Image 1 (tube, one colour):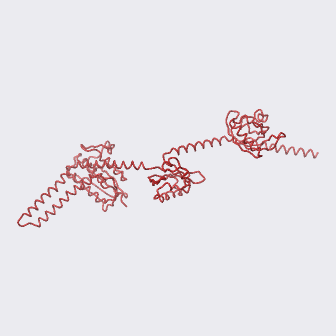
Image 2 (image 1 turned 90 degrees about the vertical axis):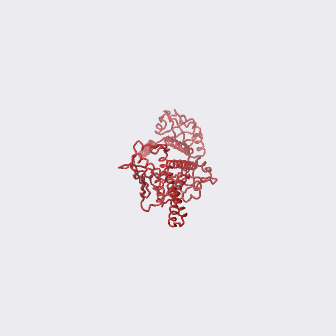
Image 3 (image 1 turned 180 degrees about the vertical axis):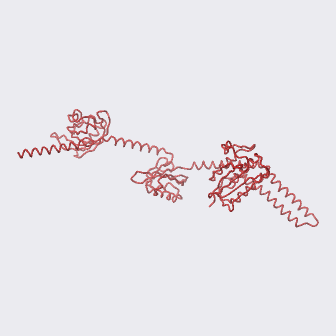
Length: 508
């Protein structure tokens, strides 16, 4: 009786262990198996997970109506067989990834881990293991590989140099554009500090720039213009942008470098063309002013002749009148200087020169152009009023080109005033004042103003409302002011006329 009870308890325990094992296998995401290490691996046990894995029922596989190798991908069967046999011969566990073709025709990737647990009397190994579906992981890996290949293709086809560096600035990757730009192969610079690509005089500036990577607020793209240096020591201008690569275990940075050589050459050509056009416009302006300039010079020349003749008469008298002679000679000298000053201003304006900005006394620059503008104002019977704030600061500019702009604006203003029938003695104002740390220069006329239609094409080259003239004035003037970091703007006055204004950088 006791023995029967013990036997029943053992059977119940065994059954409990079996059911617990069944429950465990049912809850696993893959399939457990036991098979023989023969061709196509005939199985005598599989867990319920086999249906979700391959689409076949347990009884189909356990009765060996279908063998596991029958639906293993034909291209992978030999590889799996070699892997399993090699591990079995050594008595080691094996892991292998391969493809199967499920009953519904779907191709899946599986991961299998197993080992030899026993041998039959004929020496055939008995294997037990576990197989799991890894299709999603494989698809993700494939997508990642494709994305990496795509990204690499983009990097390699980029026109700019794309370089990755570690947190210390050591080069890790170097694309083809970088090799072409700097003359190094990728393996020559890998591990070297990226300063190797710079001219020595820019090391300190780059170090300060690179140090900003420590600032959490400076994660976004940063750029700086530096001087590059290639393998042979050739130096050239570059712009370098840096951005941190996120979501990696170690901090890395991407450096994007663009060679500015062609851009600088193009900018130089634009400056030279602008200077040529500006010179042409100055000549055109002075040509239109020729009558007034001739009149302005003729007056002191007439006075010089008169004072010279008076001096001769004083000397020819029996008793020379020395006091009157001295006064006449003094006036003769003044008139000669007056004529010379007009000619000098003309020569300065007509002389071709390259644009060169320097620190200029604003008062002197404005007074000089005021004097030249008065030549035409006298012809038109207008008055140029000069309004300068006390103690105007020095400015950084090309004085000749800025005076050219002011002269153009004064002449345009007087043209407008004449067209509007302004009476003799009407005033046009040349004004300068400090505004928000810059020198603001305004030309305020009392003419007819600018219509909406005219305003739309005001700055277009070869557009002119004058009977003569090339129509370059405002276009060139706008370009000159833009080169000085400002904007040439205008507004119609409340009462009458127009105000043109621009600002210049104050010298610190």
